[in-house]
Image (cartoon, rainbow, N blue to C red):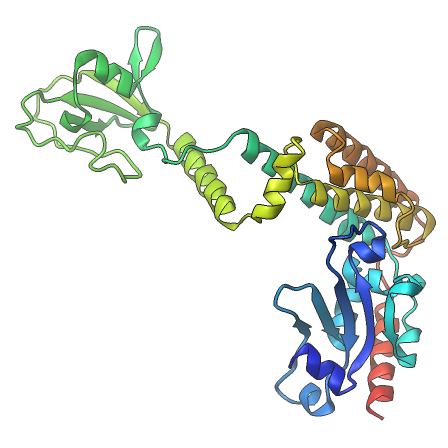
Length: 352
């Protein structure tokens, strides 16, 4: 089923312009996002081919089937609640049956988690992006050898440095585990290479140190430690960084670099908007889509603020939201029975 099917078969209950054009934060270059609610034909709803959502290729047009709409409404999903509060000039179609879904009947304390919780996740994402930009990973991943140290005097020295000072090769080293001492090894060296030691690493792509069979009576040249936890953390950070490089939106990234503040300005604008909306819902029981602080939000999008200033503002907003949550007169969650009754009545009315 496609969006064209929904419209040609008159299955829509509601359709609206969403996103920046509804918030009032759009620019001349902004796309037009659409959202809506539809009802499946009876045969598909009662049959095996239930379709809960229909989207365009880039997800800038998203339509929810009535049952899925109700499920998300019960969870106080921001996208769903925002549809119910769409400014009049952004409503493209509203079936008379859909008018029974009044937003004031569904606002609850869950909004703290759905609006502010999502915003908090975006703050963490912004911190991660800031770190990726300021602390980029080298193109080549480190090896276990970079996390091996040799005890020397009252301290420790990097194994590669220790070997270099002796003109020794890691391939001629042999390691044995020292019992009862975690990640500590006896290091032996064979200048001739005749003993067949495995080296500290068998190959460049190894993810662990290698062990060797050492002749009895041999004396270790040193005690060596391998910091496995630090190596594992490096590998994870390296993988996440290069996954991000491969998947990032280059246009969005270039905008981030252009304003020189090293954060995704558009993302931070929406983070602040969500935090403001969460506070308004909990404090006043209101859901305002068209934002009254448009210029302030656009200043964030332009990159006028420093990263640390925005993070401090966001944390202050989160603290106020927690205080509003405690005093909010809103119910803990929406009335499930009311939602179920509306779903049944709306579907029956639509089919008949």
